Length: 147
Figure 1 (cartoon, rainbow, N blue to C red):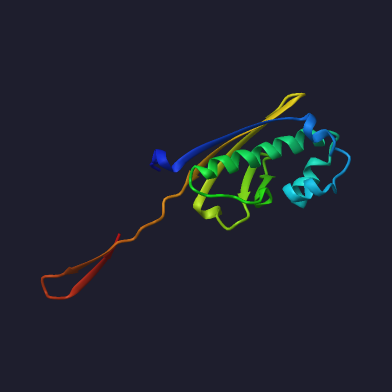
Figure 2 (cartoon, helix red, strand yellow):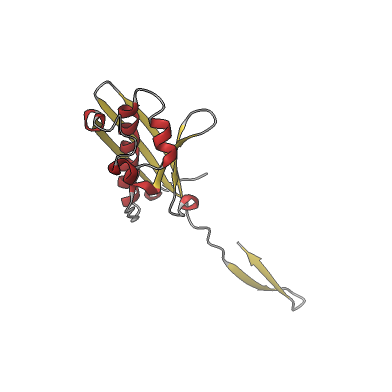
């Protein structure tokens, strides 16, 4: 597959985990409900490290937002960006605004004791443009070629 550089963007975000510690005991906090969906909250709160998980996922959402802006896409609600894990446990991104087929997104999450970060690479899939050519065969019949 050939990639055109203008179809690729990168987003990065870094957050202090301390900002999320106040929510580590309150899964139903209104702020969390505005940012995360139920699956994300379930994942974050199933261990004692909820603040780290919340911070890393917030970083991923912000990194996606930044990278998508480079493609002229404004995501108005961070809940439209879902972070989930595939069957191998690898973090993945799903856009819930119907744009999944337009973009391929890769994400890397990390955290230390004090800081969380995420980096994403967004590839905008080129639109498949089909051109129809009409050719007149030697016998006078028409042949249509779709490329």
